[in-house]
Length: 334
Image (cartoon, rainbow, N blue to C red; front, side, top):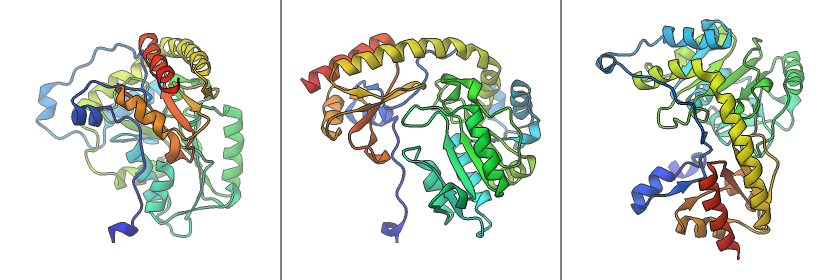
């Protein structure tokens, strides 16, 4: 029975598992985390650990609402953005007459898996889809769509009673001017996360904006108390420091340009990116290169699971760390 079930999506961020297995310190370029996160003061009252969270997360939603100038009723929260993708699909595809989705590959694999888990299937084109998944900026390519382009897509989807699901997990590290988080429309769901921007993947917190009717259904569907006290305390402070991410974007852009140039000098072909990661093409399948780098205690993302066997994805990190990566790649290739 298990053999016929869907397979898990492959992800980066394997540093912890690798360190526990090898007992070595590794440099993880497979996880695209802000290398220059804002330093924010926060604390979780120990008393909060001794009681259940407020399952409606009123104070948390009010804080997010003020930061984004939205209504608390338009906000849903979850244990990381992937939980919200799962919950969204469970709700939107509950009506089996609405069971078609569309996305453009390569992109984040969890959209397709989450939809497939409900029984939904991929449409041949966008016009036949009930949901159109968009990752902006896209993972793993790092390309970004303009706000105008996405609003036109939304117009088209709403005209056929469809929904646009826009995942903006990396947009605060790319170009927040292209965000749809300020748009309230019945046919739009916007996903946000503090994981990448504030470099806290271990806390697990995601949030989304949607029509209040959809939010209410998602809040009923998600597991109770899905956001723990530590994640809630950090998230409430983090969303108040979104303006501090301007410095992060500036430093990331500088390092991204330097890293792209150096990757090109090694003989690889980095693709243009707006995000805090770079998709890099090799002349042949990259499995051997990834293994060689891992033997040097450096992890990069093998993009074969995206359907790109000749590509790796590397995070933009600090200059010192980026130099280590370039030196390692140079040694592996030459």
